[in-house]
Image (cartoon, rainbow, N blue to C red):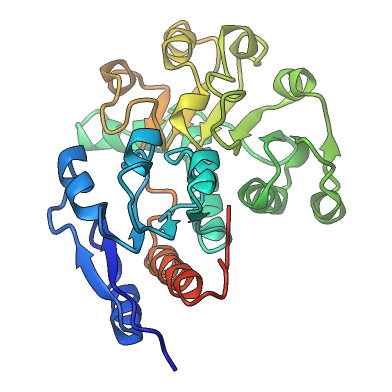
Length: 321
């Protein structure tokens, strides 16, 4: 017999199919209605008697907030990353933490390549050039960019998304090198990729794509010393987490044209973006749209909902952290 579930709180409107799935199962679903991040005060009030919570990355479930979860069995994060949750403390409180891997791999890898091409071919700069009436005719040296074939794509973090991005890069005729804790046999078999030490990767790559999780070890991983290793013709891409790059040092590097370009979908203090980025022609900046496809966002919502139902039914998490 299907067990009657009590409260599920969702911190932002997600795809209706996921909410319907929870309601059809018997959940009492409450959704924060405003199109903005919920305040901490409101969040505390909403989660006190919740059996499950589906939060976004904007909600920081630190120890004091987790202590407010009086009945909660699961925090089903609506993201593949989970740096917004103190996972170890949640486990001590017997709260399961889940994420949404796999379902956003293709969308984020696609965007990585979109950024790569945009930087290489100066797409944003060219569009503004035409839009602002500067285009007066074709010239042999007008807005010259970089071809991809034969260039080296360095993948920092060869997990699901890093691997998918590398495979796409290989399709453009790029040479793949990667740095990862473990050897990625599948990536090597598909792309002939070579595993390399981090500093070697940074020195040799024409394009460097960051796919690392945000941890204490990776905070400001791309610091001054590592940025100084990049070629003057290098393109740095980040669709992972903004905090992995020391933004002040990256801005300095871009201003001094010590690298060719940076393509960024994530930032250190989102949604507050350092205004210096907006003034740089050699920076392509996007508003964290890596997983922003109908397919990915729908499947993220459904996976979070299925995790909730599975845990509260006593079957265990589908994608536990």
